[in-house]
Length: 249
Ligand SMILES: [Zn+2]
Image 1 (cartoon, rainbow, N blue to C red):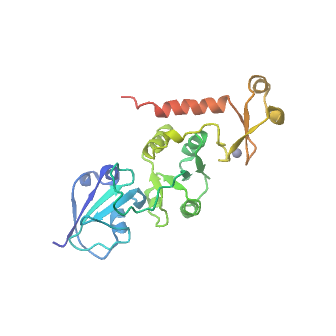
Image 2: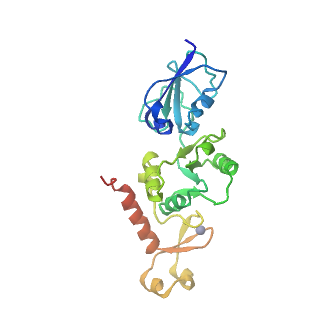
């Protein structure tokens, strides 16, 4: 009875090699290791994990596995009532703030268009993404599993989809954020907050047609970009319609 038995539940199976999904995985016990390192050796980032049971008892990531242990690993968004047990994180990040890694620039712009706070810069190193995530309580969005394995990151989401519109739908659905969409509140260029501004104050920045047809304007409090309830707002509404529509087929 020196083997370890692991089982991963629900969408954590996305990360496993096909032959290991949705079944008990038996491995010989080799050496002293934490349950975090054991789980990640299967390619499952720890940020995806909400609950770990070892022989039916909830443990944290630092738990050292022993020969014969049976380990059950549950995902963050599993609809399973785990309140009486130890959750691995004290509380969800209530007002979600994001940091998108360098490969997710269009997703970052879409999230801003829908009013979400999403830090993005195209030259960040992994260590900088991790540091900003922790110091500013931002959820890391990435398609890079190695980034999510950085120990200091507590809140991260591995984006499965590869098309930006599908990605934004995936993130908002999986994190249950569709009701928090607030278009026309955030600058898509720099992530700054928009504030209402009098038309008179921005007349010089407007094309003649915009000056003629629009009366409601907002301006970015950080970079000064002017937005009006025309193109920007319409794009947001189209995106909302697209991502809330059930997938075709
Ligand atoms: Zn701005």
